[in-house]
Image (cartoon, rainbow, N blue to C red; front, top):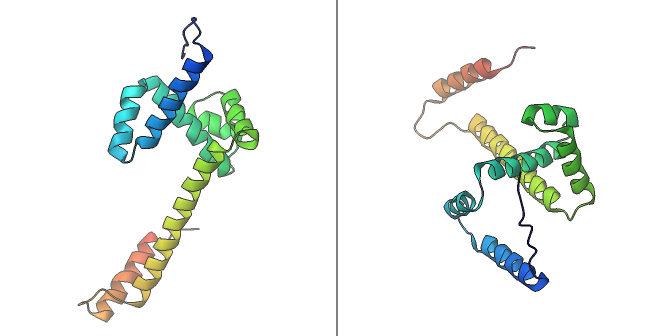
Length: 147
């Protein structure tokens, strides 16, 4: 469990170190920089704890049942409830991140559909149309799910 020193800081010092903390996070630009900062800043347990909370928020945004989320992520139902409460009445951080991830997933699905549509109409350059259509038909038959 995360612990805070029993010796409280002066309010102005606490505010300043929090400001430096936020500025430091804001300076991180690349994925490798994020990984380096997170690895140095957080313990393995803290990383898992935060990743699970964000995953809970994403699954709640996708309308998964709270008990299913708790069971799947091996967290307490109270943790799921806490994230859910924060999503509904917090400052919007969870909603923002979950919304961005969902929009990104939907964008990728949309682009994939466009790509599939184009591939259904036009064969790759230099290929025989007849053979290409036969290959596409066989691929669709293999990927088709039985009822």
